Image (cartoon, rainbow, N blue to C red; front, side, top):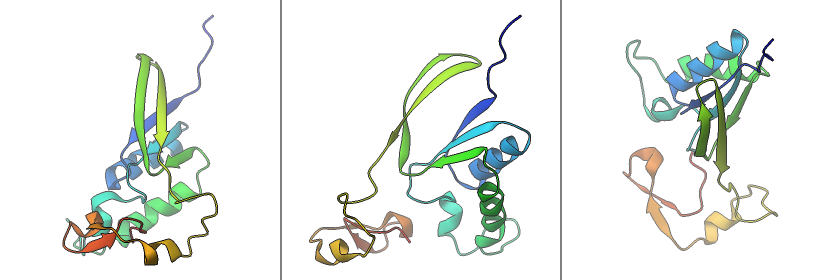
Length: 140
């Protein structure tokens, strides 16, 4: 008799589709790891004023999925993260996740003092490069 392995999946990308996929999979019993390269969930939809087809603000659909994820212990999400390596075969993969730093040093309290003194500016990816932000920043 074969040993039953845990049912788990990895969802890459935490846009509206990735969030929905993760939450739906978790609600039917899978353990889900949601991997997102950005420091926030919601993807492109969070950057828009309104989204298709309802033409409503992004917080409409995202808020529902955020609440569902928050209430579901089967979903673990990793922001500022990337897949570093995948090994194995169908049904038996091992995935290594690289989690990027989210602070300047261990003393960080998110007070923004480092942002004020940062001398380097960069295009603001969240605003599609239409303005600039410091190299140290909170996305939104």
